[in-house]
Length: 231
Image 1: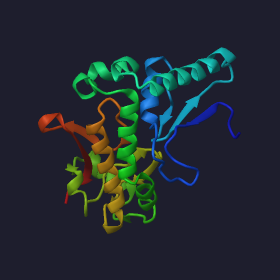
Image 2 (image 1 turned 120 degrees about the horizontal axis):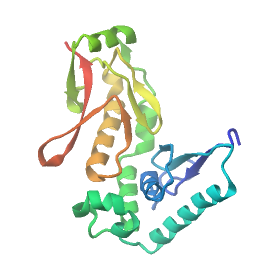
Image 3 (image 1 turned 90 degrees about the horizontal axis):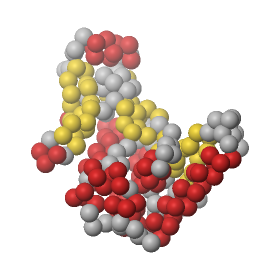
C-alpha cells in the first residue's frame, strides 16, 4: 500500500499479536526454495520475505512468484525430502538433511525460534541504549590504526565495539562503534548467540549479520567474533 514495488510475504508461525503459533514455516526455508528457482528475496526475516519488483515487471513475472510459492506448499504438505525440495542446500550438507522432510525441517526451525523467544529478545535489545564511550569517529580511528582485537561473544560484556552490529531481522543496528556492551546490552549478546546457534544448527540457512566475523572451530562449528577496541 505504501510502495507498490515492495512486496512483503508473511509466512506462518506468528499470530496477529506477535505470539508464536504451534506450527510454522520460517522465512529462510522458503527463501532457499525460491532462490533455487531463480527468485531472490531482497531481505529475509524469520517469518517475512521482502521481494522487490520494478515498474517494468510483467504479470507473468508476478505469476512466477505465486506459482513457486504454491509449488513450495505442495512439497511442504507432502513432506517431500529436503534432497528433492532444496537440492542446493542438500548438496552442501547431505549428512545434516539426509533423512529429513521439508515439513519436518520447517517445524524444527519454528520450534527453535519459539523456544528462543525471538519476539522477547528483539524487544529487550532495543529497550536500553548501550553506553557511548567513544564517538563513532574515534572508534573507527582505533580500527584503522589496528588498536582492536577480535572478541568471541562470551567475551563481549564490558568491551567497546569498534564496528557496527547489524542483524536482519530487524535490519536496525543493535550497537554502533564506540558503544560498550554494558549491563543493559545482555539482550544484544543473547540475540547474537541465537544467530550463531542458528547457523550451526541449520547450515545452508545462515542469516544476515553485519559487523560479525564468522570463523570455524573444532568440529566445523561456526563461531561469531566482533572487533572491539583494545583495552
